[in-house]
Image (cartoon, rainbow, N blue to C red; front, top):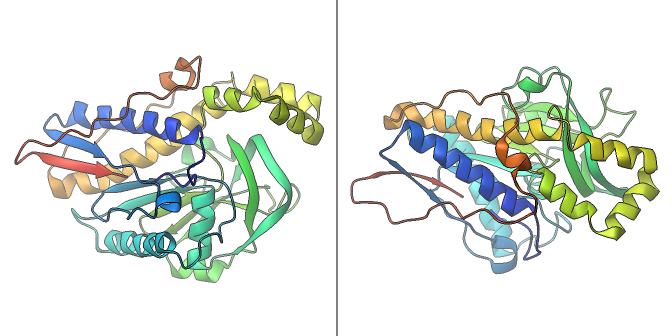
Length: 313
């Protein structure tokens, strides 16, 4: 789901590439399964969100998470969240799952009233450390990273003052935050298991080197980063882009791991072969693009009659 409200962005290119790689993995282990991608942009078109997909990736986007309250797309999104969680509770072949990023994270937190979603005093942007909680270090989404990972952040809003009782009542868990102690570097909540089938992060695990470099190539963005964080931090961030243990590892493990794990949840009931764990190594796609260009859109061909289909939005 493209939540960028019609704005040009790098995120959808990255998500298309990750989806294409996931489809390749599925079909390598399940040659008879056809994978179909459905792409919708509900904020600017009010296009209905399909209810019959198996996996949903919901992107970040600009603006306030309170924009559009009461409009058809926000009501549709709320129904989707509740439907996905209910399907995950029931389990089986019809289980669905949703992964929410940045703006979508804020929508999810607001929908479930898990925390206060408030404007930041200033914009946070750049490649930043994300600190996992003890629970997050055991959760499959973030367990490969130990006590921290690095990811691209670009946000004017944040979720603070977590209602732990409400989160626990949904079956959720706090996975990551802005500071190890929850205070010193910022109070923002950065990662949640929200409810069965619904996981969400405030940062951008889909960001690749090409996307960040495209952002830094804009003089006003580079100047703003230096003014906010300093020249030394700017050059440290550039080095981070070439460190396989940092942004490249986040790109290679977070969303690909989620996709594989959620596919395996439905593999047994549908008679599919499960996917093996993601290799803990930089994904070739991370550094493969010298320019931030769109990879080919994953195939959306018409399935052969009787063919099994796995759908994702």
